[in-house]
Amino acid sequence: MATADALLKPDHASRRQHFIFTEEHDQLRESIHSFVVKELAPHAEEWEETTFPDWVFRRMGELGFLGLSYPEEYGGQGGDYYCNLVLAEEMTHANCGGLAMGVAVHTDMATPPIFLFGSEQQKQDYLVPSINGEKISCLGISEPDAGSDVAGIKTRAVRDGDDWVINGSKTFITNGHRADYIVLVTKTEPDLGYDGFSLFVVDMDLPGVVREKKLEKLGMHASDTALLAFQDVRVPADALLGQEGKGFYHIMWELQGERLIGAAGCVAGAQKLFDRTLRYASERNAFGRPIGKFQAIRHKFADMATKIEAGRQMVYTTAWRVQNGEYPVREVSMAKLYTARMACEVADECLQIHGGAGYMKEYGIERAWRDLRLNRIGAGTDEVMLDVIGRSYGL
Ligand SMILES: Cc1cc2nc3c(=O)[nH]c(=O)nc-3n(C[C@H](O)[C@H](O)[C@H](O)COP(=O)(O)OP(=O)(O)OC[C@H]3O[C@@H](n4cnc5c(N)ncnc54)[C@H](O)[C@@H]3O)c2cc1C
Image (cartoon, rainbow, N blue to C red; front, side, top):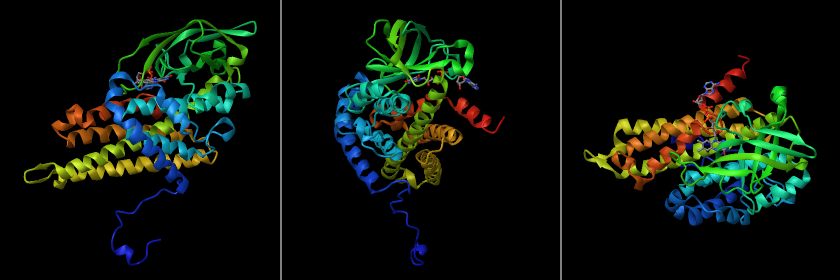
């Protein structure tokens, strides 16, 4: 509590530590930050051209960063959900959106369903080597004819004796070119509606798995994005992940983690742009004064800071709900929607405040502007989030 004396002067310089984080989280943050700044950030430019190399996974596995909240028995660090937020936030300091996304797909999208729904054997075969960085994962939901409409996917898995035979295609798959395995969403009983989906863990070197095309994109250049085909891919019965027929519900659960971690990345990304632009506005002069001293610019900062803070509170409060056992789909959707929009607005304002420099490659603002734009599309578009929120009120 502030004392009466302190009330006389606002404490703008306080640490403002959020109540969900402890000293252990701070230590973790420091060690991830130092790794990211020393070992990843120096390569950001190069990886925009080449995509980031696979050694990043091995190195992060070695350091224990790929299994922060997984139990120690699987090689994880046994931490809480907030550790995943710390990782997502600190990865933004690599200045390389594609890298942060490639890692997040592995830690917070493809491996969680294996941990929650997988058999003990699947955990040993896929989760353990993913945590130590030996195996790289990807997640296959989207298809050329079905993205937002997950229920409209066409990839089929048909039982054949003890095996399953899979046919179909997946697109926009992050890590799809480098991955050792894919967590794949299929239809097993098309006539059963939402009860006709099943997940599989499929090795990417099986006959019939074709990495068709490396897709070119607006931003996130450091990540690889694949169009994949599955042509009579035969997998054994134990490749089924979770309950047969319950894949739709399993993947909807997965999407909540994917959305919340994306929201954390949006807040951290926006904050980083804000900080850099604040420095720029103090150094850049026009009409005889730093541009930050113009009211028009000062108000832009005030507006951005308020929105970033609102986004942060949404993410942290929703994370607290998750950590405490809730399944807060409405709040996750709100956090995802709000922070994705907010990060794009902040990136645009920061670019504007940089003037012509913001449009130039060397300042890195244009790249962040391009990278962040994905957040209004990936993991569920703005429109889909609005629909989920609206429907949650029975409409
Ligand atoms: C760089 C990148 C990486 C990705 N990585 C992965 C990945 O690793 N794995 C994976 O499975 N997918 C991945 N995706 C796919 C991503 O999740 C989809 O692009 C997203 O869900 C939108 O689907 P869509 O592109 O098919 O758009 P569509 O579903 O075709 O939507 C087109 C437009 O219609 C709107 N729309 C659709 N339905 C409605 C509705 N009911 N009401 C109102 N508007 C609607 C959408 O909001 C959008 O504006 C990635 C995408 C990108 C761009």
